[in-house]
Length: 120
Image (cartoon, rainbow, N blue to C red; front, side, top):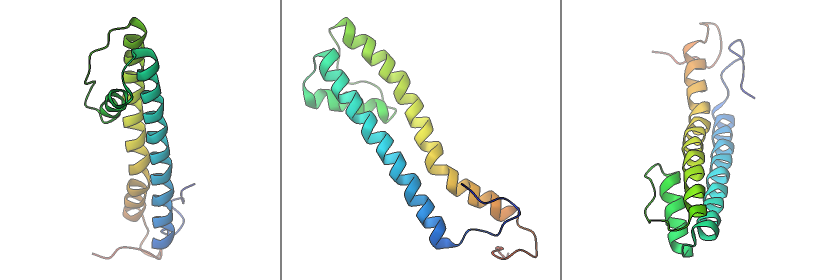
């Protein structure tokens, strides 16, 4: 997916396209997770839709739950969703940073005779 260190630096339009693709997949993961969490809190936790959405959004944002759950199934769902949300937060952050960090490292490792070198 990414160019090797022996290859020239990716042109800026292609790099922007790569960023947009990573942003698209990140948004899809977050929106899918938000939907899953909202439905789960509503079904298992017996919360209203808006409260379910708020709890899911807060967990996916790394903040923590807002309301108190009264059902055991809701508490179990909240525990597993909290673990899942933490992994989603880490994964999406990595997915968004990967192209930028790759370009930075690739730029730093270009040979003097390769095109696309950043001059100091």
